[in-house]
Image (cartoon, rainbow, N blue to C red; front, top):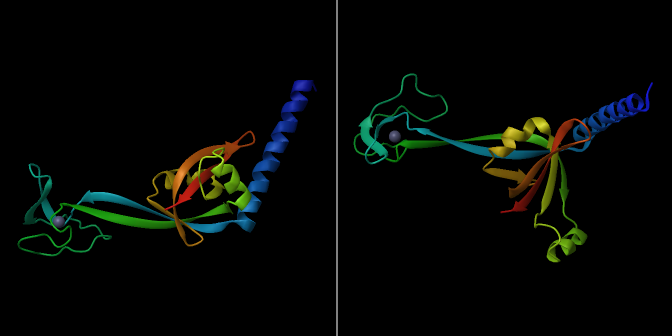
Length: 169
Ligand SMILES: [Zn+2]
């Protein structure tokens, strides 16, 4: 075995240990963090007016009608589903497991000295949660609503986790 082969096999083994250890830690010590994200769709209960960019005030239910939106509800005047906006916002909530670290008073000292960008809590989670975090409108950590300050991928050799810094809302 050459030195290079030896080194790369050591690195591969350490990488596996690093990834396995993180998975076990997340499993044992991770807490559920609630993520809510919203998507806006054209209101399925009424028609759309291209000129005013709102509901056209006509009952025009989509078929099939989406299961996660109230209705279809016949109406005259203002569509009761979108209140005449022509758009309907749905919020989906899910939870992901994260290692959670709230900042200590010592961390805050460095923040007040301007050495760290202000954040209140750091989350570490599996790389597969990237999209769900990226689309999050609100994140609830230990009952506190926070928003993301920064998000980066991390790992030893294999990118296996995400570090997320969040600030209280
Ligand atoms: Zn509508």
